[in-house]
Image (cartoon, rainbow, N blue to C red):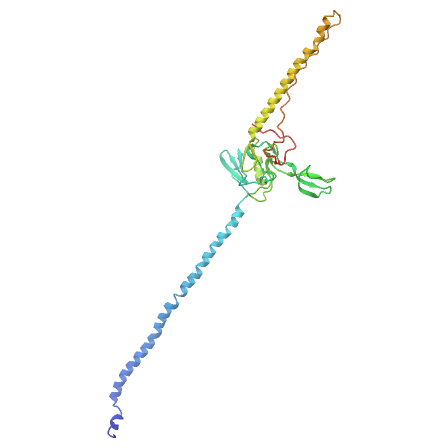
Length: 339
């Protein structure tokens, strides 16, 4: 037993220690190398995992911002358009207006010089209770300062308005009060029952608002009044009492009145010629009695009465519908529409 101890516990030789240290040193170097490389591998793995991830997120968050900002001007665009949208437009400079077309459905009027459009405007035609007639018309009269004699306001003795939408004869005027007709500046008559073009409010563009006349913005009415002549054709289309070719109807009415006046004048002349023959009979009887008394001289034959001038067309045009209520019929006779 004792013989084995010296061999087992004997101190190793120095060369053996060195030989044993070589593999240990190599192992430690390998471990250190692996430890030194491990952080680089982590960084390489961490960079692809962390860096690309935020990039798509940031891109997704930033891209919607311009997309949301772009629609904003689109929503704001209607507001400038409304501000730029005018009630009227005029491109005619100093041109004269040869014809006017009014569309009651769109509540717009278009102006032409020949076939060339030179302007347009919103209008306000008659309400359902006071429909504007449709048909072919012509400007028959122009009055720069006109007031209605059918619609207006009633004031009391102290000058206070007691009724703002009044009709004389229908609404009572208090003692000391008065009726004041509604203003219709730059009035251009189209019919003898008071329908015409004039300046007035357009409270709701595209909707009727008047008592039958065709309202226009004041600036447009001023332009028209300066550039429209008597006889300028006006065509009104849409829904309303159909007056047909009003110009032709008035021409025929004037011709019929002239023919009637001529017929009455001829009848008066015929009666005047028959009167002298009846007055000469007493003279013939006096000669047969041998009396010295001279025969009475026949009275001179009266001259034929001159034909009376043709009566002006009636101021009240027979309404096409029984419920038709005209607006602003003129109190003074209007000049007949030119041929």
